[in-house]
Image 1 (spheres, helix red, strand yellow):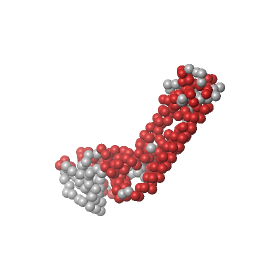
Image 2: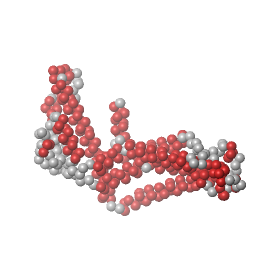
Image 3: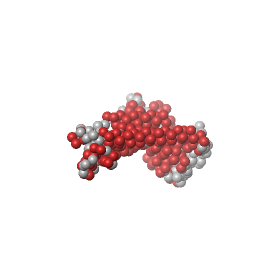
Image 4: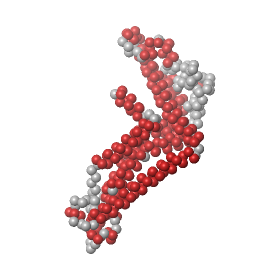
Length: 334
């Protein structure tokens, strides 16, 4: 189970190569699903369009949502957009960059699905067979309007008795398939041209803003992961201390059987240092609340005087002995 969790966390990382690989796998999966899908047009005047357009556009919506779910940065972007202002301002340029990056990756698989369905032509033929002008085809002459609608609806069903000997069925199918393939190739060509222009015209614009947005979007994601890792470390040490206090009479036996954490060998004083002085539930709750509502400004060189959490109106910058900021203060008085 730990191996699966590690793999899942790895694929949820902010690495662009990993996310591009996931988008490529979704695109290949969409093509594989479509080729394995048993397409059966209902061949009824009022159901063909709903079925054909549904097959063309409903799976892309599901693939788009899957792309958003697998992209960890989508949740980070929403949290950054919805978080309180606090002492750290929110940069809309960074949020726009994150949103653009997320949407671009999530749209790959849906676009591939739509292009594949258009190039195949079955969906569009099923959806619009009843909308074809019957006067363009000789086989529908001398028939009533109702019969024409029924015959056109049965064009995708080549095994139907009414259309088996109809000479215009193949003509209508080729006509709609040509339009479908022309639309698919046109969309593909437009996307290639747009990607080419974006690729080659990007250096003509302000690169400084782009680099800043990319840097701080990566920072937000990295900061969230480091904070969660630090919280997990503190939770494990806190739980270890609580268990040792609960089994105080069995403390030495627990240590001998290696139930203690690796840091426990350093002694109680070392564990207290790793706990950063946060030793009860109220302190943890206040600290987490303060982190959410008032994140400290992005200045690792700045240090402020610490005050009790109950009197704190703004976040503090916590620095350890090496001068780097820590997620938890080393001493908190409540």
